[in-house]
Image 1 (cartoon, rainbow, N blue to C red):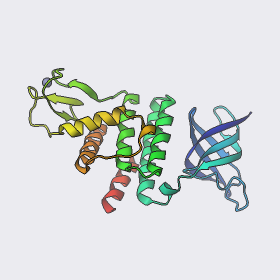
Image 2: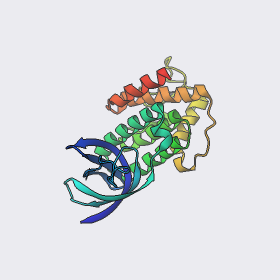
Image 3: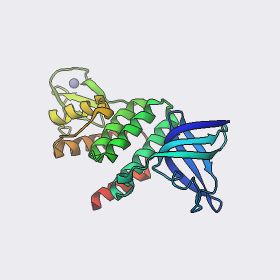
Image 4: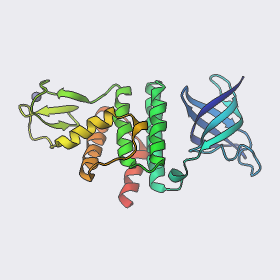
Length: 243
Ligand SMILES: [Zn+2]
């Protein structure tokens, strides 16, 4: 059956001498596609058969089997990301993360959150902030959302002192036992990240220490609650340190 899908090539694997197997992430999930002969210089499939290509792909679709690519139209190749090692590292991590989440939850909203985040990084918005926004939003799909309503120990909504990533939410002054202080600006920003509609973000005006605190919170929270361990995250951390 001939079918046209819109999506992003999230991985490519060499196949035989001149071909590739592409994984295209779409609203319907990940579709494996054989791109025959695409490594040939003259192949019309060449430019659309690589990672970071977003486009329309016409395929001979086989359910539960590998489909075959017939033709495609490139809509974006994320030039800024693919020519910047640091941004490529963010892309690799976010893609691996989303692929893990999709294994557990096939909600099509995840696809649009992912694409919106990658577009904003391409537009030049701070990749660390965009990464944290997507990470926070994905927690709900992993079934481990942050409690942003009340003290995680006693349920009180008053006198909130900090938020603790290992306790999973706020800590009030009554329950406080020396946890690291994430100040009110950081806590407000965490909430903003969770609530913001990614497509509407035009610019980010966030103090550096708040960005770093939110990032520390989110990565500790992920380590504590998601059970995900991703090599691309280690690679990203090393890349950021060098930069
Ligand atoms: Zn409390």
